[in-house]
Amino acid sequence: MFQNSLSKSQFIRGLQCPKSLWLYKFRSKLRTLPDQAKLALFAAGTEVGQLAQKLFSGGKELQFGGTSFAQKLDLTAQYIKSGVNNIYEATLKYDDILVMVDILHKVKDGWEIYEVKSSTSEKEVSVDDIALQYHVLRGWGLNIVKASLIHINNQYVREQKLDIKQLFKVVDLTEVVQEKQEFIQNKLKALRKVLWERNMPLLDIGPQCFKPYECDFKDYCWQHIPGYSIFNLRGMKLEEKFELYKQGILDFRRVPFNYALTDKQSQQIKAELNDEKMIDQKKIKAFLDKLYYPLYFLDFETFQTPIPPFKGIRPFQQIPFQYSLHYLNSSFDVLSHKEFLAEPGTDPRLKLVKQLVKDIPANTCILAYNSSFEKKVIEDLADIYPDYADKLRDISNRVFDLMIPFQQNYVYTKEMKGSYSIKKVLPALVPELSYQGLEINNGGIASITYRELVKEKDQGKRAKVKDNLLQYCKLDTLAMVEIWRKLQSFI
Image 1 (tube, rainbow, N blue to C red):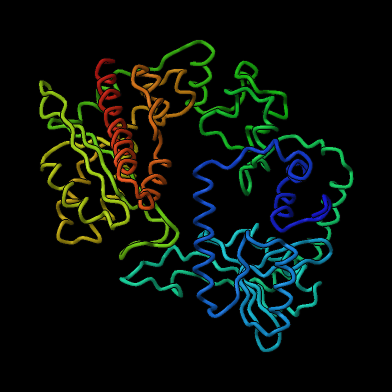
Image 2: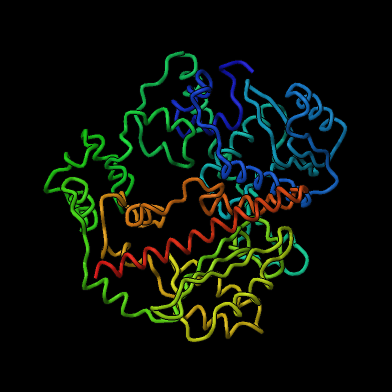
């Protein structure tokens, strides 16, 4: 394709930021390549798109890859002329704009466009996407009588069999798409002008770097921003941070003394500039006094998918497949550990529930970091397994949140960099304990690794990956133990 031609994704990129489009066209090597999490997200989107095709069965699909765009254009034209009613990934070009339509559906008086998204709501970027398709298909010569968005219905709860008519929600956007046609044409002219200029647009960083997606040229465009700056100020809206940036304020030292900051933001700045530590012994003691023995430290690992894989699951519901438990029966007890990891490719929930209620006795005190997550997982399990509901809800009622002392600023040091994430708190308070060196070092990678493990046939490799998962989750609860001990040392 010529440098001044546009694909649908390039147009959407240009709407977000013309500079990003220019860089993509002329300096593509400066892009940050997608990481494992983004690749998994793309794969999930592809799976959703393929499933949605079943709403309009019996069609012809133009596979992404394998054939050239020229061949796809020819095939699409052939399918249209031969009377194929449903074309998946229909590829058409008009006015030097290439689009691939997720589902092109023939009706009595014309054609309908269906764009499939794995999101759970209608977004402006999706409307722009469909509006461009409408512009191209009309220009190509098709009579488009309807333009719709298909997205995930997050209220759907799967029964034994997946019901795709309930899973998907179809939103008719024909009227708003038609109203957007002048906007589309004006934007196309503006973006082509950017590309004809051959010089990179002098566009500074701004909120567009993140909305609607984080730009893959951000690392390049943000080279002048220090690793720790006003953009790391805790609890400040992105727009406020850019207002400071526009005033030439990046370093904490340059924030005006009379600038309206929250107490936590002021504490963050003071800690950084003066190496001040916040240790509120009274509040720490009040928090610790609520805890009692036997004391258990709990962490779940979960995965989520847009397509519910099991009965009783909603789209994007967190499904626990692993947990770690460290525990102390008394202040004199030696630290002990229990763990659970489900077999990949199976519904992990019932086995996990049975083991969990055995591993956590009654009348124990339970600590989790960001306990709302663990409590929600447990409550969801109680809803689906009534035979264990009482025991599970009893466990949930005994969970305390180890994050509170850091979220509420009972403890703050500059090493936390404005965050109360356990990944920041641990190295700040217990630097000798680290996630560095682990094959799996965050929950996102753990989730992806677990789901991908079902494809691994080599038993030795499977065993190694399982061990990596266990080591990561075990470190999460050990980190909680050491953070709790550190809190005790403060009083």
